[in-house]
Image (cartoon, rainbow, N blue to C red; front, side, top):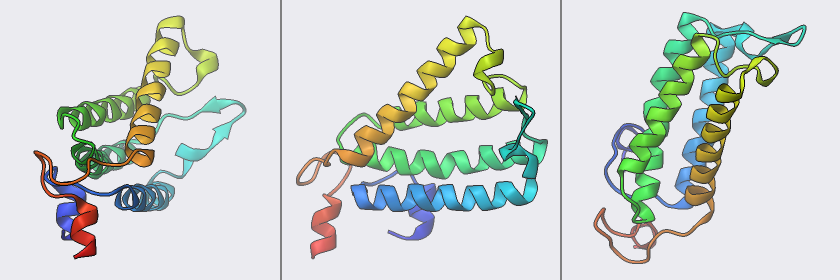
Length: 154
């Protein structure tokens, strides 16, 4: 699988190791780019969390697709419906837009509804990481393709 397919295609399957490598690479790249284009995004000034700049928001929206593509391929390996990855990507995009508008940034400033939304997002993201990062894929081929571990061993 080429790097372009790995980061931008929703087709196929990837192993847990490929998932973690891709996720860690995206986090490292995202942190470096964010520090360059939106240095204030990672700072908390006097207990106040800053909303991202338009450039930071655009970058976060752009990085959402490669994250989604990796999650979809991992859900494919687990033989889960691929739409779960798209739903996760939609949640990530909604969180980026909400943060840009100042929502869901500071739990101390949220009303109960916002806290419930944030809790739901945290649960969904952690569930996805646990499901995709720690559970083995289906052995042998499934409806999404051949086993990525069998391909590696050939």
